Length: 471
Image (cartoon, rainbow, N blue to C red; front, side, top):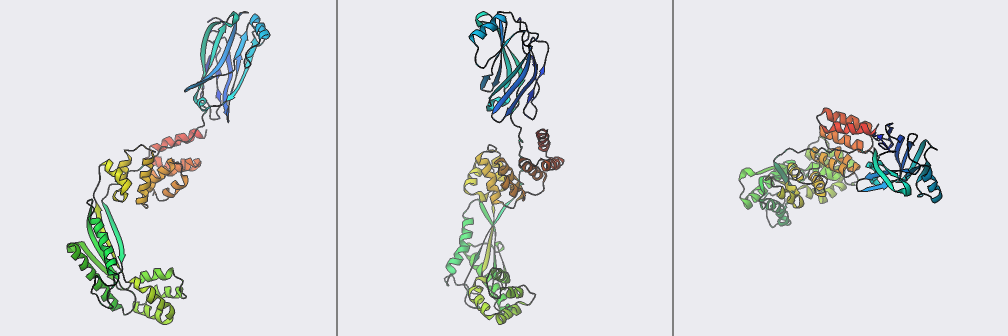
C-alpha cells in the first residue's frame, strides 16, 4: 500500500510489574513508533507513544488516519485518532474541522507526533491487544486502503498469589466408638441388693438400657463391650466402702446381663472404693470457707480414712455440707458401651450420612465423598468442616479444614486449624499458603522451601509465584 508500506510495526514486549508496557521501534515502515507506553492508574488507562513521520510520503490530496484500538474479550475501544494530511487535505480540514478527539498534522511541518490518550479503565482492558488501524484516504475522505498493525499485548491486571491447595487423605481405620454415661443407683444403706423400683432407680437404670438399646437397634453397629465402674462416697470406713463398691457393681452387671443375655465376656466391671477425684473436682470449683485446706487434705498422701476424719473434725460445717449435698453424687456407676460401625463404600450413602448421621463416618470415608464433589463448592467445604467437628483433635482433619478456611479467605480460622495440624510436609506447606496470603512472603518462602524438601511438588510453583510478585 503506497504511502503506508507495512504501516506501524512495533516489537511486542511483556508488561513489567509496574503495569507499564514498553514497545520498541522498527525502521522498516514509513511510520516508526518510539517509546510506546501503556499504564494504568486506578480507574484510568494511559497510552503514549511517539510516531516518527519523517519518512512518510502522502500526496497533497491524500491523508493517513491512524487510530489506536484496544480489543479485548467481548469488547473493544477506539482511541483518539491522528490525521496526517497532505497540503490540500490539511487546509480542507482547517476550514471544515475534524472530529473533536482527532489530532491534525500537516505532512512536512512535523517530523514526530507525540501521541497521548487517557480513557476510563475497564476490566477487559487488562489483557487487551493494542493495535493501530491505518486508513489511507483520498479526495473527499474516500478510503483508498485500510490496514491494521498489532502494537502490544497488554498485561495490566495486578498480579496476585494463586494458591494450590494440597489436601491429605486420612488413613482408613476401624470405626470404634464409645458411648458413656453415669447412673446414680440407689441402694439401701450398707447393702448391695438392687431394687429396680427403689427411689430413682427406674429412671437411672433406664439411662443405661436406653444407651445399649440405641446402639443395638442400629443395623450398622456391633457392640464390642459394655463396661461398668462403681464408686462409693468417702465416708469411712474405707473397707466397707470397698465392699459396697465391688458388690453393687457386680449386682448392676448381673442386672444388665439379664436384660440382654449378653455373654459374660462382653461385660466388664471395675470399682473404686471412694471417689476422691470426684470430690476434689467439686471442692476445687466450690466456694467452701475452707476450700484450700480441704483440697490440701484431699491431695495429701494420707490414708483415705485419715483424710476423711480430719476433714470432719477440723471443718465440721463444711463437712456437713459435703455429706448432705455432695457425697450422694459420688455414689455412682459409670458405664461405657464400646461399639464398631461398619464401613461405607457407596459415595451416595456417605453423602446422605454426612447430612444425617456424620458420627457414623470415618475421616477416610468423608474424604472419599469429597473427591466426588466440586472443589471449593459449598458441599465440598462443608464436608471438611464436618470432619473437623467430628474429629477436633485429628491432625489430618485440622489440616484439611485449614485448607478449606484458606480457600474461603478465613485466615484466622485457618490459623486455629493449623495449630493442630501437626508437622507433616503438607501441614508445613499449608502454613506457607497462610503466610503468603497474609502477605508475609519472607516466612512463606522458608515454609515452601521446607515443604519442597519434604516432597510437596506444588511448593516449587508457589516459590515461583512469590519470585514474580517480588520483582
